[in-house]
Length: 173
Image (tube, rainbow, N blue to C red; front, side):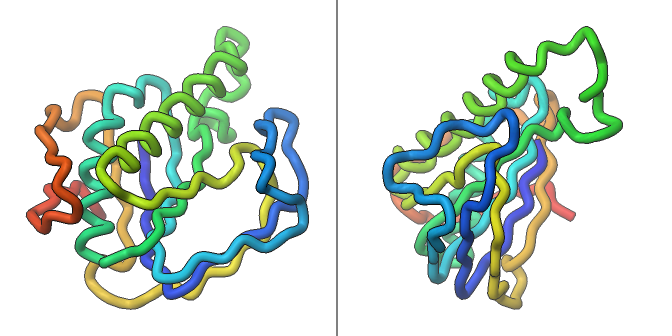
C-alpha cells in the first residue's frame, strides 16, 4: 500500500465520468456537482494485493497524521496500484474483478477503522474520473508518502482515544 497524504486548506472535486470498473455512486453523489472540504487531510491510496493485512497499521498512521495536522475531514481516494501499466495489469493469470473487489475491501476496511476511532471520513467514488482542486498547506506534516508492505511492520495496538498525539513511526519519504 502506498499512501500519498496532503494537508489542505481546501479541497474540492467534481465527478465527471465513470471508468469501466467504477462502483455505483451513493445516492448523495451527483455527477457534475462539486464536493468541497476545508482543513482536511487528502489521501490518495494505492492498494496492492495482500494489503488487507496492513490496514490496521495504515489506520494508525493516518490517524496520527490527522492528529499532527489537526485535520477536520479525511478524504480518501483509492485506486488499485496493481492495475497500473507495468504492474501486472496485462497478466492473463490475474483475475481483475477479484483484484478490484479486494481493493474495495481494503479501502472500506480502512474507512471503517478510521471512523471507529472518531475520524470524519469521506471516500471518493472508486473508479470515477474527477476534476480536483487543492490548496495544499506548507509545513512538516503537510505532505507525506507512506509505503506499507504486508511484511514491513508488525501489528500495533491502538486506542479509541481520539487524536492522542504520539510518535507515528511513519516510514515516509
